[in-house]
Amino acid sequence: MMNMLLLVHLIAVCAWVGGGIYERFFVLKAVDHAKGTNYEARMVQIMLKAVPYFKVVTALLILSGLAMTLINAQGSFSWIVHWSWLSLKVYIMIALMVFGYAFINPPLNKVAAHIKLDIDNDQIVTDETRAAVRRIGVLLDIAHLGVIVNLILGVTKFF
Image 1 (cartoon, rainbow, N blue to C red):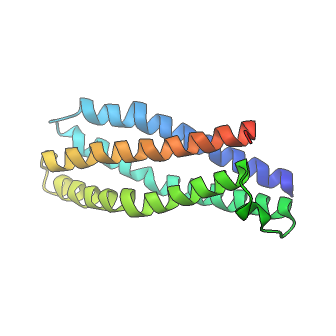
Image 2 (cartoon, rainbow, N blue to C red):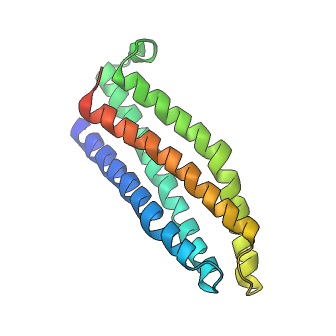
């Protein structure tokens, strides 16, 4: 059971890191290159279509990590109060969840509504939407940094 959970967890980590690299270096770069063209709205729409996958991957990360933590702790919650690499990973993930729902989801929803209107009206993306997409890129970079820190903590079990 533990090996299966670990496999699911590692696949979710790979999906998140791979998706983050794809989003940062390919999708956002393509959105920048399409600036001012009819393709820009479609490129932003492609970026937004990846959001549900990131939510599923996040859920897999959280659930598999929590299950492994509880199995290893044998029902004890002492890892919550004792400072260790595992408790730090949990705290970082909780912070990322709050960060995502508080700071990333609202602009994503706003951009999705703007892009839908732009596509329906066959208009070019507005400067306000472009600025929101750039902000989303920065916010996602912060979230990806948190995942990379968690990845390093998991691999090294630093302290």
